[in-house]
Image (cartoon, rainbow, N blue to C red; front, side, top):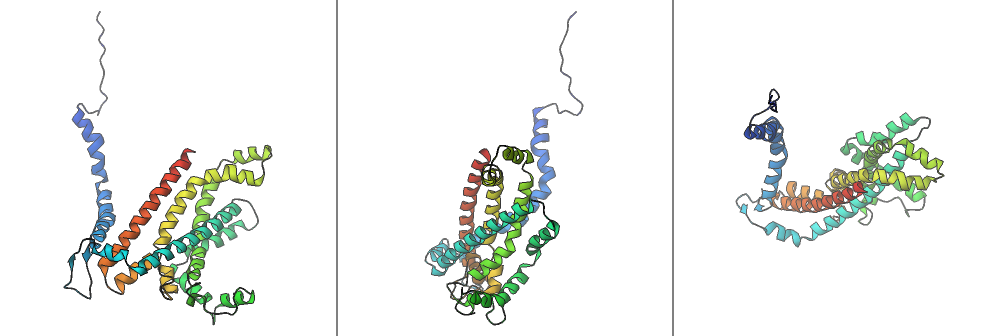
Amino acid sequence: MTLSLTTKRLPGTPRTGRALYWRYMVEPFLYLSPAILLIVSVLLMPLIIGISYSFQAIELLRPFNTGWVGLENFAKLWSDRKFWLALDNTFWWTFWSISFQFLLGLGLALLLNTQFYGKKLFQALVFLPWAVPTFLSALTWAWLFNPVIGPLPHWLAALGILSEPYNIMGDPDLALWGPIVANVWFGVPFFAITLLAALQSIPGELFEAAKIDGASAWQIFSKITLPFLAPMIAITVMLRTIWIANFADLIYVMTGGGPANSTQIVSSYIFTTAFRKLDFGYASAIAVALLGILLVYAVIVLWIRKKLVKI
């Protein structure tokens, strides 16, 4: 008797390599094509058009002086003193906003990760600023900093921090701190929410074992909590940095970029160049420069996060 080993083909299994290629390499993209077309039309095409504008002269006040100018807008940008001042302001605006938002958000997340009376009410109050519209937040903080009817200058003068209750946002040396304080109040809930979710995902057995071994509170935080939070911290700091660098709403409403451009950041400079000077070509060049800086920053942070995940 001769035994022959045969391989049976399952029902519905393609017979040829071409059929396999069609099923697993081409067919999924056909199903995804509506989403891909939507992403390309909504995200990619405006990006390409915006970048192309940076190589053109597009000034509505000079409609006949248009066309491709190559790198002329970027050469103008390199020697633009206002751009470099706005870039410096953007760094400090982003740095101090992120620093205070992260530290306060981490503290609130650690607090909300414990049990105490009235936790639900406190949690709702903590998350409330994130739900307030930006325009309303800016108007409220502009009123609070008003030297005539606002309480903050009078409180600071009573504490001896200010010599008298004067207009803080009218002082070029202090004006940027007004929008920074408003931005910290607005952005703390973002870090509190995300870090609280990360804290609740840490296995409780690790904390119990550390307490049994006699670890102090600082050792538990530095050896268990912080390493587990590190990847989440990296991604949230990256996202929030990009948002804040592009976040001109508070500054535009509270100070308009003044006084003397002391609160002008790159994103607000883009807005004023495009919609006040009506120079869309130069505004696009500024936007492309900011995009390049943020892309480099994002690559560095993602590389650091990859290292942290491996650890």
